[in-house]
Image (cartoon, rainbow, N blue to C red; front, side, top):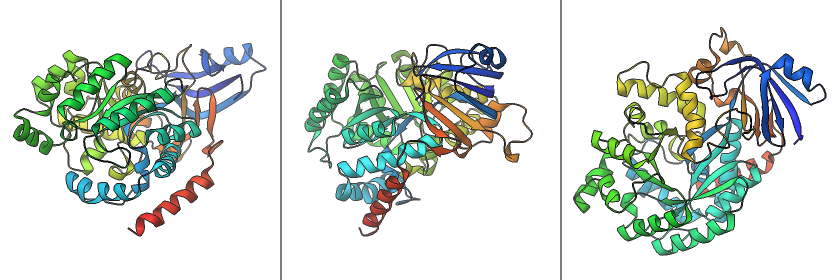
Amino acid sequence: MSDAFIVHARWIAPVVPAGTILEDHAIVVQNGSISEIGPAPDIRSRYPDLPLTTLNDHLLVPGFVNCHGHAAMTLLRGYADDLEMMTWLTEAIWPVEGKLVDDSFVFDGTRLAAAEMIRGGTTCAADMYFFPEAAARAFEDMKMRAQVSFPVIQFPTAWARDEEEHIHKGLAFHDEFKNASRITTAFGPHAPYSVTNAGFEKVVLYSEQLEMPMHLHLHETEKEVTDSISEHGVRPIARIAELGVISPSLQAVHMTQLRTDEIELLARGGVQVVHCPESNQKLASGFCPVESLRKQGVNVAVGTDGAASNNDLDLIAETRSASLLSKVVSGDATSLNAHASLEMMTMGGARFLGLDDDIGSLEAGKLADMTAIDFSSFRHKPMYNPVSQLINTASGQDVSHFWIGGDLLLDSGEFTQADMATIVARTTEWQERIRLL
């Protein structure tokens, strides 16, 4: 990384101030952070000796933030498609995980996922899977930012025997990575149906003591809700509210089954929500009421979920799905417009992860996490509004340049640091092992 350089783009959408598009502007990066943004002629005349990247037909935006995924499950992309969710889990995913998931599976799968996310413009991801130490090492190897949640689940898994051991090993994982520069940690109670009351109470206690978030699948399907009523006499949100889980520390994932009173509860509790529209559609889980949540002041971020249930990690495509579904669900064609969608996948994601002081917008003093989208192709002609073009037309394959903390990780669509030959070779080896099951 150069200590200082300039990026001059045709358009810059800084996200803050909201709705802004800067034309023919440049950004000065020094020591991994943005030091100045201004008209390109002025910047270039005042810093004539700094290295310069000129992006003639590009939109420069903050790096995308993917707020929910299971990165290692990228090795299971396409393995079990077109199944109902619980059938998908119990008859396909959990059995193969029980046979193959280990430290190396998670490391290799997470590197593959990180490469896909880098190629698609995602600079920061929230991950939730077994062997979180391996996932964290893989994200560090790929130089990505990540919040890595360790699973808390009452059943035996490849990583731990029971709920107590999951928590014990997770706390050791937190201690190991608490000083990492690009990795943060979180509790990952899997779901209300897989965590006991005692487990939730312990997670809440440690979360408060360590000031760590709780990343939880919640109200993902109608069956989850009806099963909770049968077993506990109440809907899942009501149950976890009694256990103290509803708080600003809660990162609630999916939320496809929500009543008005539950949305109000989430808003009062300061809960943040991550919407995974394509996975929810594929598994027929339902639709998150994004517009209703946003109107109540709930921060809604966007996530791809894992590639085993999506089947890609393209956050541009995911956000387009979120925008279109919000219009259909709300009955309002103005819902989640292009600028609001860009905010959701950048600043909204940074806020979701508690990183909004550092990333999520292009502002002086923030880290230089930046994504450039190339609009030179005929597919992007004519051009009237580059932010609308990003949300409604582009894909991750249009990303050309990509920086994290000033590190150039993608240059004209080519990886600059990732060992892609090894990543692809390891993926092929895992594919052959999975085929033999």
